[in-house]
Figure (cartoon, rainbow, N blue to C red):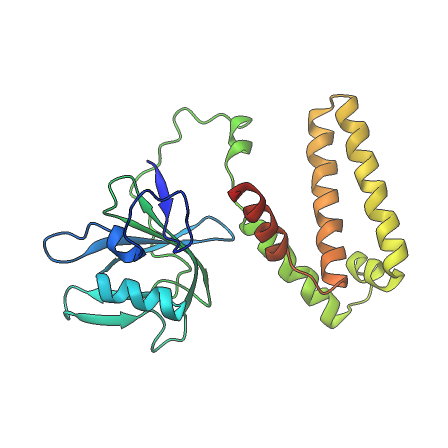
Length: 232
């Protein structure tokens, strides 16, 4: 499925109309399904419906607004729970009749308290699962969990923590350690040691996250930089 992005400054859009909302082909009820995805982890959070007004409000306000088919009125996600969804980017599919909202959630997406509305599994389809190919499945949530652990270690400074040891060593020592991890990864790659490459890559990412925390920077900033580079 081809996805395009709603962007008023998108020069590649062939449509002569300047209003991005007019690009969407709402159905006979004036609605379009909208999938919300966590832009950091890739997790699908929920499915709701938007009409023209809710889409406009989302673009203007930055928080996800939807249209309730049962109550026949607009609603702001998080209006009562404060679990807002801060929309970073809006895409639409090749038929221009479905929306994808890439957002940063302020809390659980589901009214049950689950992080995503899609927490139940209908069936398992693991008949042809290959453990090695399973490594190719991308799940970035562990990075966010690791970031939270590092932040907690920085704030509480528990005894015996390697993370605390790194943070207290200072920027120069931390930079040196990060360089060492990079060299070890490079050597593993030269020697074509698959498992060692995975381990050294994990070490490098961990030390990178500690360094970012020490500098007051975030992984989200790195991901944003990558998105900007590959969007050009």
